[in-house]
Length: 128
Image (cartoon, rainbow, N blue to C red; front, top):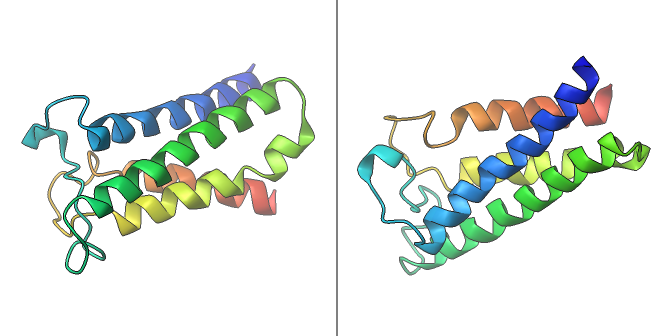
């Protein structure tokens, strides 16, 4: 039972990434309480204002699909899904780091908890 819940958690972790896609695409109006701004401490200084947001949509969208597919694959018994779980985990972790706005407020909303989950899943996939 715990094993099944773990696999469902992986799918849900993937689905959370779609929230960042939703914000990045502008499908909901941005509110400051949402935390994530679509800006990047690393890229916003030398790229047009929209390019970091578009890149973030790509990173988060890819990791959302791959996490969801990995969790479903694990539920269906495909061993390869667990072996390749590190791919969406590292894409997700990179997205959180690259597309952080550099501000220390609202870190949970900006993905720090998700970063820890993704790094844990990468470790699980690579070393366990």
